[in-house]
Length: 236
Image (cartoon, rainbow, N blue to C red; front, side, top):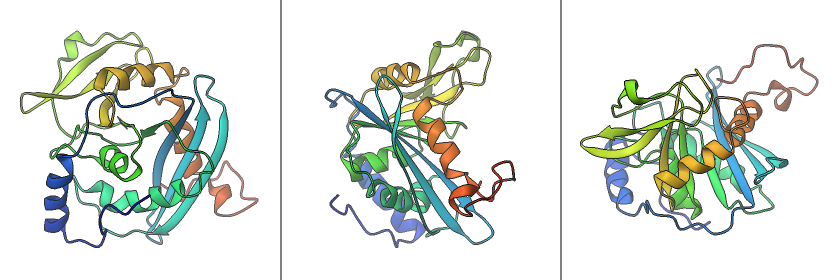
């Protein structure tokens, strides 16, 4: 991976950089055959201000895990709404360095272009990795949608609108469960993003790649070998 920029930036510098990088995001399909999908999630240990990134590589469409990696480093930036990637992406890139096999597509727990400046962590990572990425958010950051048009059935979805622009979709990945916020990250369209998310759903709210990464990021056993897995996780 060629460095895209420095991470040690002020809040004002980071926002200015986002505006420049957003111009480079490709919202059209530029992906080839998909045989491996990576799931990405993050956890933060507030006690010692450590960031832990988890990357899980799965086969597609079988969804069999072939690689699991974590990477930890000190948090580089305090939490600032809209600048999550500057807090979490460096650790994620560290985890990606450990992959022995390149992913064809990446699903990120976070936003793609469904972001005030159209560059959430999924889009930011897509630029760094030069791999198609999808934002799979759990909590709405920007935008509105017509709740009445969103069916309770799995597979239904409605557009997410922000400033008169479609920036993503509210997607029901499981029947009668709160929808996911799906948005293009980089090098993929919204429609194709929704297709892959639904095809990777295995009866849970989270698509399997990010579900596996979520579990790995919060697993105390990685921090303290032999720790009872039922103990509360230190990572949130």
